Structure formats: C-alpha cells, structure tokens
Length: 126
Ligand code: AMP
Ligand code: ZN
Image 1 (cartoon, rainbow, N blue to C red):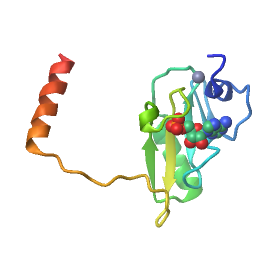
Image 2: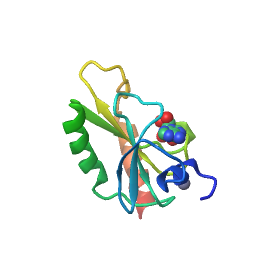
Image 3: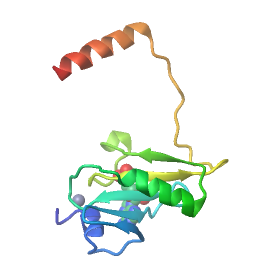
Image 4: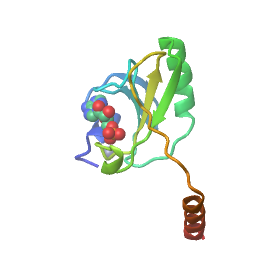
C-alpha cells in the first residue's frame, strides 16, 4: 500500500532501526518503546502470515538484552489500541521491576456467561 508508513519502513523506503530482515519480515525498534528493546515485527507484505520470527527474535534479544521475559502483543482495531493499520506484532522485553504495565485486572468468568459464549462461538464456527 503506497500510503502505509509500515509498508515504507518494511520495504526500506523509510529508514528504521532494523534488528533483523529477511525476504518476508523486517524487525525494527519502536519509536515509542514500552521498555528497552521494544521491537515491531513488520511483514513486508501489507498482510502476511507469521512464521518462526517471534521465537528467533525473542531468543536473540534475550541474549543481547538480558531481559527476564517478553510480552508479544498484537493489537487489532482502534478499540484494541491499534494505531498503524499494517499488521504487526510488538515484541516487548520485560525486566524485573519495569513499569510497562501490559496487564489487566482479572474479571470473573460466570457460569452462565461461559456457557453463552461457548455456545455462540462454537455455533459461529460451524
Ligand atoms: P499499534 O498501536 O499496535 O498500531 O502500534 C503502532 C506502534 O508503532 C506504536 O508503538 C508506535 O510507537 C510505533 N511507531 C509508529 N510509527 C513508527 C515509526 N515510524 N517507526 C517506529 N515505530 C513507529
Ligand atoms: Zn502497509
């Protein structure tokens, strides 16, 4: 897509802090990082499948950064916080004591709600 910022970055038309690149993906540092090392996995196609990239990147970044864990976040839609509409995954290193706050307050799964959701979603899959 000609007007997509992530297409331009993934394709190398706009410079980026690139950690990794192959025929299908470019992995760049996020300009507004949640933690040190926050990376974005950008498919070069405007839509593309995921292969082994997240696992390989997490292993390399753990070795390089010494982080204690990762969040892999993928936002879909404005309501979910998506701001750039070129599919991408956030690879966010986590450090003991960091304040990234990628979490939520657990609710409660009530029996009737559980049964309703299971019935509706399984029906929708048929
Ligand atoms: P999302 O909200 O899931 O769509 O994530 C978009 C992410 O892209 C945000 O975390 C931004 O900080 C990041 N971002 C936007 N523009 C750029 C850019 N030109 N280079 C690197 N990261 C960017
Ligand atoms: Zn795009």
